[in-house]
Amino acid sequence: MPRLSDTTRARRRQHILTSAWGCFSRDGFHATSMDDIITATGMSSSAVYRYFRSKEEIVRASAEEGVTRVREIFVALLDRDPCPDPAETLTLLVTELHRRTDNPDYDMNRIALQTWAEALRDPVLHHRARQLYVDTLEHIAELARRWRDNGYLPPDADTKAVATTLLSIMQGLIVMHHVVGDVPAHALRTGVALLGAATRTPPPTSTPATQTTT
Image (tube, rainbow, N blue to C red; front, side, top):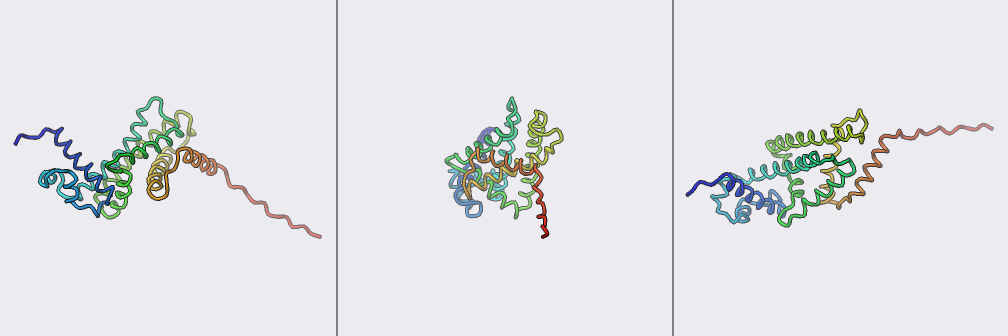
C-alpha cells in the first residue's frame, strides 16, 4: 500500500473529527459511541483507529479545535486594519457565533457547551482547555490595548479585565443561544453600554429624612 501524504492524512483526520461533531451535536459526547462515529465517517474501523485510539481522544481533539477556533476569532479581529472598535467587535462576535451554528452538519457551539461540562471530569481536557483559553485571553487583551491606544478606553484601563469580560460575554452568548434565546447585537451593545455607565456612576446616597418638631 502506498504511503499517505501528510495532506491526505490531515484531511482524513479532519473528516473523522467533522463526522464525530455531527454525532456529538445530535446526541452528545456520552450517548455517542465509537461505532456511531465510525459509521458516520464511512471508513473502516481500522482506518479510524489509526488516527484516534478511542472516543476520548476524539472528544479531546474536538474540544481543542473548538477553543482554537474561538482564539482565531480574536486573531482575525487583530488582523483587521483598521482595528474594529468595541461596539463593532460585539456585533462581529454575535455574527460569528451565528455562523458557527449555521453549518448543516454540526454545531460547534453545542460542542462548546459539552466541552465545559466534560472538562469538569477530565483533568487532561481541563488542563488543555485552560491553556488555550488563557492564550485566547492574551489575544483579547491585545485587542483591548489597541482600544486603549485609540482612545476607546481610558489610558489607565485594565486591559486584562476587559479581556476577561469580553470572553465571558462570548461564552454567555453561547448559553443564551441554546438555553434561552439569541441576543441581538443591538441589545448586547445597549446592555453593555448601560452596565458600563452604571458601574462608573456612584450609587445615589439617600438623605435621611429630617424630623420636624412641633
